[in-house]
Length: 155
Image (tube, rainbow, N blue to C red; front, side, top):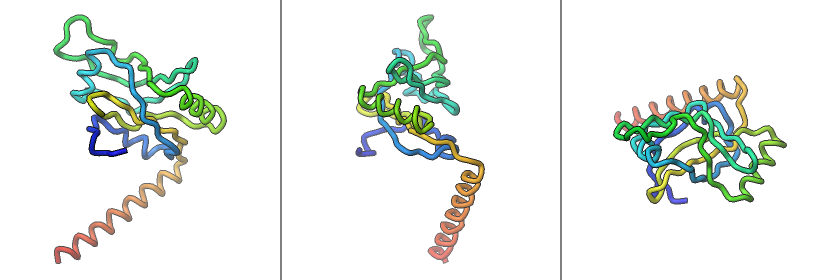
């Protein structure tokens, strides 16, 4: 997929730190009118959001879309579960992975593609504490290497 045709609205960096991401799926999301406007303004919060498969449908929970400030009394419920749009085969595949391997479905980022709000849904496995420490160490080493390299370029 070409990354230039998508505008990232929000990323879940915490999920990339807390989980091993085994696979990703691009999903549509069912939103009401005022929700779309709030999302496009970036008024969303999803640090502990997750997706659940209920009766063959995928739903995102703990995903907060703030009320649209310019709306009338017909505003949306900020914390209602939102339905994700996937093909039936993809949902079957996800159901098997979640049931058999103990994976979790986590929204990784929200973005606009051709004017529509899309979600990158990650099939994730939780990291243990030592995995997180290793990730921090790797990040620090990479930062030190970048500093060394930048210092040699300047001087």
